[in-house]
Length: 153
Ligand SMILES: C[S@@+](CC[C@H](N)C(=O)[O-])C[C@H]1O[C@@H](n2cnc3c(N)ncnc32)[C@H](O)[C@@H]1O
Image 1 (cartoon, rainbow, N blue to C red):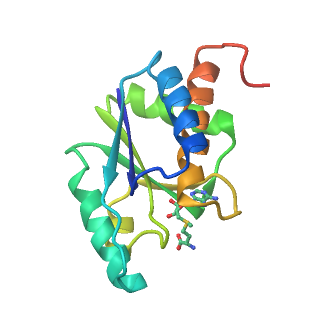
Image 2 (image 1 turned 135 degrees about the horizontal axis):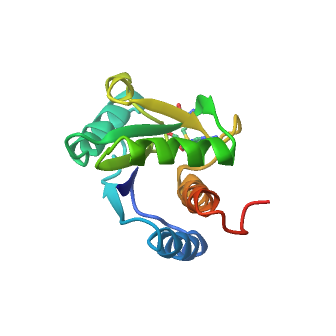
């Protein structure tokens, strides 16, 4: 099963980029991983900007993918539960598992309706840039759990 992570806008901070490259490389030891960026909407009002960004995210979604939104109001999972969720998708022959991270103003209602699941990394709000790194680390952690490797304690 392929993993795809889609997000809005370029990664600005060098230290986040370095972390993304590190964890993307680690995930690729277990599964093909693709990262896709949608263009950020600049200068638009909150609602219009969100709608435009989500329309671009929607274009990045392959057919038959399982779409998971990252949102602070979503289901709170621990790392083992995330690992089990990834395993279930893989065992159900889902061809592509897509994680979507919103832009600065989050997701439109229309985009939310397309998702199979919405998960939170915490109830705290993180920057949309930091969430990229946190999510990749959790996906990597999930694969180490599924492979009984000594990373998760
Ligand atoms: C700055 S947040 C947007 C917050 C905004 N309150 C909203 O309505 O979504 C930008 C993006 O980062 C991600 N994000 C931020 N904190 C998160 C958390 N605790 N768990 C999961 N995703 C989070 C979400 O994908 C969100 O769309």
